[in-house]
Length: 178
Image (cartoon, rainbow, N blue to C red; front, side, top):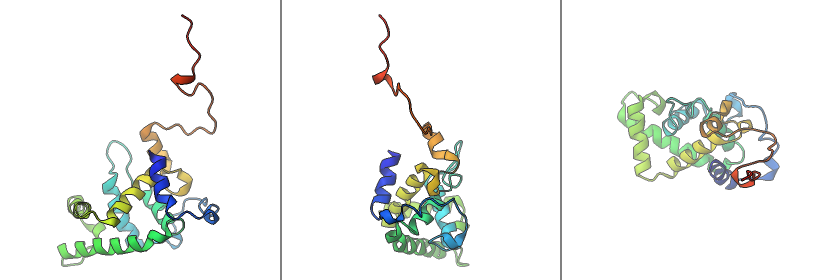
């Protein structure tokens, strides 16, 4: 399932010439990102609502926002405008709730959830793109920027082995003597 989600997000804008640049080490250098620091902060707050931290690591711990911002700067560059418009709309909603002009990330979790639910109810294209990218980043190979510490893989019990040896499952085990 994780592969299918990741593939659906990546497939829309994949360019094989980008295969090399997708492998650099994970960076928090904002110059290497497609979004501003403020936009990244708001996006991180939104992703933390989609996969929250509880007994297990969430989107923040898995550094999903690194995956998304790196993607928007490379293989998903065609979605960058959608993310920028959506984040502007999100901050417009936040500004309407606070005369001082607080950003979305500065609100409490309850108010953030209310604004996110509004987007979801309206079937916002932006919210759906963030949701899919968050899930993809949570389960992606860590070398692409998300799934830090293999948090997503540990959550689903995926073993990161370089090589697999039989038996792979019940279907190819040697039959037991009768």
